[in-house]
Length: 65
Image 1 (spheres, helix red, strand yellow):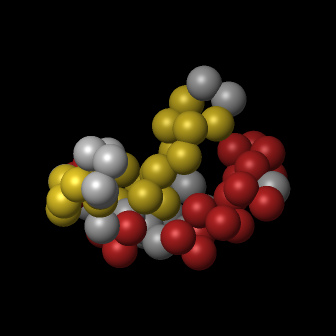
Image 2 (tube, one colour):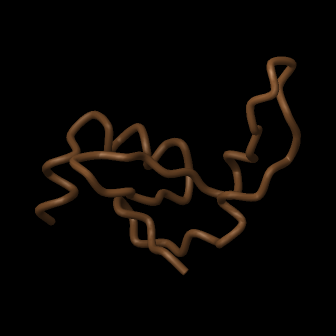
C-alpha cells in the first residue's frame, strides 16, 4: 500500500481498478479511490484530487519534505 505524498494518508490498491470505459475506449478509474501523478521519472500517489492538486502546484516542496 502506498501513502499520499502530501498528507501521508494510505492510498488503497484499488487506485488502478477500472470502473468503465469512455466512448473512445479509454479506461476510466474512480478518483475517490485515490489518484497518481508521474513526475520526474517516478509515480507519486495521492488519496484525493485535492492532495494531487497541491502537489502539482509545488511538487519539489513535497518531494524534498
